[in-house]
Length: 367
Image (cartoon, rainbow, N blue to C red; front, side):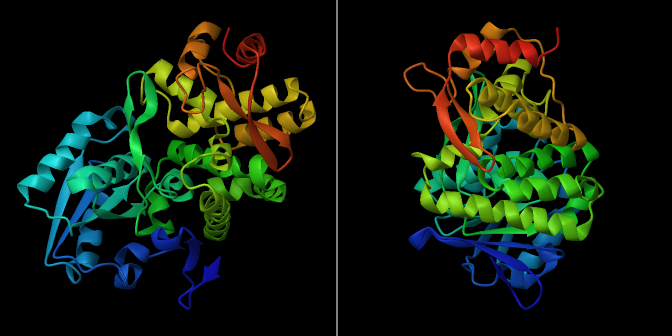
C-alpha cells in the first residue's frame, strides 16, 4: 500500500500490463486528479442506477467534463433483481444510440450490481472497451469493484454469466458511504469480515475491537477497513487473477450465501446478508471437518451478529440448498466444494459429505 501526498491511499493491483491502482479517500469523486493518467477519450459514459444517480451522477459528470468532449449517462433500475440481461441490453442500446466507439471510456458509478453489469457490458461491447470502477457502497469498495470479475445473474444461479475484465482504476470515495442505509453498511461489513478468517487473523481481532466504530461510519476506522480489505484482495488477485486456485478463498461464505439469494429470489436478502449467514455455516462446516475448534466459529458468529447481519438462514430445506449449491462455480462434476477455514487466517477449498452439509444447514436455518 502506498499513500499519496494528498492523503489519498493507493493500493496497487499487480497484473503486468493490466495493473492498476485502487484510490481510497474522501472527496475523490469531485477531484479531477482522481482520474489523472486515464485515457482522454472523446466519449465517456457513466453507468449508474436510479438510487445513485440523483446523489452523485452530476458530480462525477462535472469532474469528467474537462477530460472528455462528450459525457453520456445511462441510468439502470436499482437492485439485485435488475442484474440481468435486460440491464445489460439497456447499456448496449444506449452505447449504440450514442455512436460510442472502441475508445469510449465507461465509468461504473454505484454499488456491486452496477459495477458487475457495467463491467460485463464493457467486456463485451465491440469485443472490449476500457472502464473505471467508481464504487459508492462499502461492499463494492472492499470487494466487488476490485479484481475484474463482472457478471449478471441467471434464475438458476448468481453471477453465472460473465467475464474477467479488469478496470483501469478503482476510485473509492469514502464520503459516499454517508448516504448508505444501515442495512447496506452491514451488508458491506460481511465482505470486510471475511478477510480475517481466510487471510489475516489479526485483522479479525481489529474488527472485533472496531465493529461499533465501523457501523457508526467513523472515518478513520472505515479508511483502515477499506484499505486492509483491498490490500488482502489485491494480493490474492495478483497471484490468481482468473480463480484457478487461491482466489477461490475469497468466496468464503458465498456458496451457502448464493444459495440463499437464489433460493429466496434476488433482492430478498442483500448479497452481504447471504454472505454473513453463509460464513456462519461455513465456519460450522470447518468445525465438523475437524479443521478449527468450535470456539473460533462462535467467535466469528458473534462478530457477524454484532455487524447487524443475519446468522440464521431461511428454511429452504436441505435438498434445495444442496441442489442450488451444485450449480456453484466451484463445483466439479456435480460435487460441491466449500471454502473452509483450515486455521485462523488460513483457508482452502474442500468437498464435504452431503449428510454433513445437511446437518450444518439444519443447525443454522429456521425450523
